[in-house]
Length: 70
Image 1: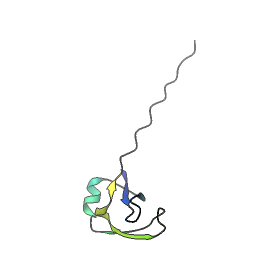
Image 2 (image 1 turned 180 degrees about the horizontal axis):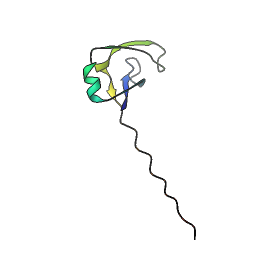
Image 3 (image 1 turned 30 degrees about the horizontal axis):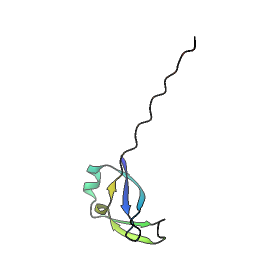
Image 4 (image 1 turned 120 degrees about the horizontal axis):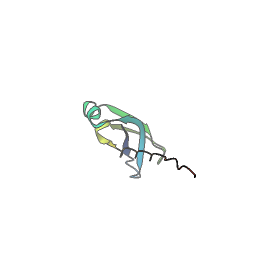
């Protein structure tokens, strides 16, 4: 799963929607409205899901290895 991210039409900066989804699920809801408060410009934007994009999934955290002291 990845975060659905939109672009603020006023500032061009990213708006992270708080919606986590995958490409297949997003394809089923392309025309649903998404209403977001934008922290970049302070306005409410009315968008549709297809206007968003999926952020890159977070990289897995490296496994921690324990080193035995001799």
